[in-house]
Image 1 (cartoon, one colour):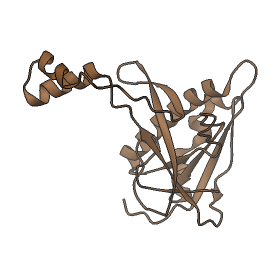
Image 2 (cartoon, helix red, strand yellow):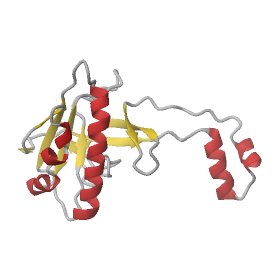
Image 3 (cartoon, one colour):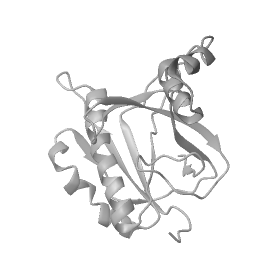
Image 4 (tube, helix red, strand yellow):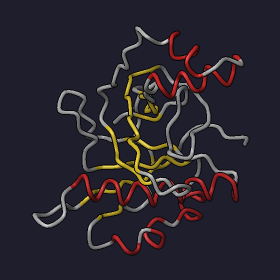
Length: 194
C-alpha cells in the first residue's frame, strides 16, 4: 500500500433524539463502518483512519462525531458512505469530502483490550505450557483484573453474535505514517487533529 499522507476527510454527525440516543446510534453506525472498512481493506487494499472529534476521557464519552480520513478523494468515492449508510440517513448527517486543513497537531486513536479474567488467562497458560488447568490457576491466585476506563463502543460480533466493548484510547503524537485496522484505529498511525 504505497500511500503518502492523508489528504481528505468526511465527517458523520449522529443525530440523536429523545427516541434514539447517541450511544445507540454510535453502536449501529460504527458496526456498519467496521464492515465497510474491512471490505475496502481486503477488496481494494485501502486503509482508512477514524477519529472522534468530541472524544472526552473525563466524561467517558466517544461523542457524536466520527471522521473518516482518506489518502485520496478517490478512496472516499469507493467507500461511498451515503449509499452504504443509507438505512441510517434519517439519523446521521454525512458531509461532503473535504480537504484536510493545515495543522501540525496529530493524534492516535487505538484499541485498548482488557487482559481478561484469571480463568481465561489460566486456560491459555495451561494450553501454552502443557500444564493442567489447576496448576495454571495457581499461577494466577494473586491476579486482579484491571478494568480499563477508556470510553467504549458496544459492538456485536459478526462471527459469534456476542456483544463486546471496543475501548478506545486517544493520545497526542508527532506525525507517524502507518496502517489502520478494520476499526480505523492504529497503535502507531496518526490522524490530523483539528
